[in-house]
Length: 173
Image 1 (cartoon, one colour):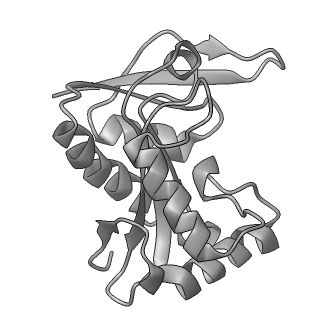
Image 2 (cartoon, rainbow, N blue to C red; image 1 turned 135 degrees about the horizontal axis):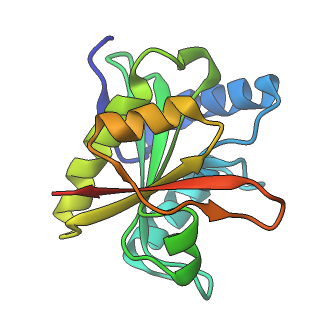
């Protein structure tokens, strides 16, 4: 695995984000975390909305402050993204947790999920959160392995209305 770093979104990543987004679309997949999904606004406006979400400015009712990070390699190619929620709502306590992350389709099964979560946990600790909830779909064995590799201890599963089983893990300091 090449040297990778978790960074906040910036104008310098506009082209890399476009390529990242296009790969997800070509794969026919919904971008994960959802905070990275395409929006009908220029990238510069996305930067402002991501910053505001982190500061708690103009966030929708029922949402919490959250920080977005991209996992980039030495060429500033975006390999994945992490969305760190500063608090948990009742819904996030069931499904979603403190950290949502995803790895671009072409970079999976290379250890990046484990690394993005590892580096995200450092950022979570900076917020003073000592017990971190991370969830994944039951059939997402790669994510489950990444969570377990970072010390995740499985808690009671949550079952969505459509029958999807969500694994819930706690990672303690």
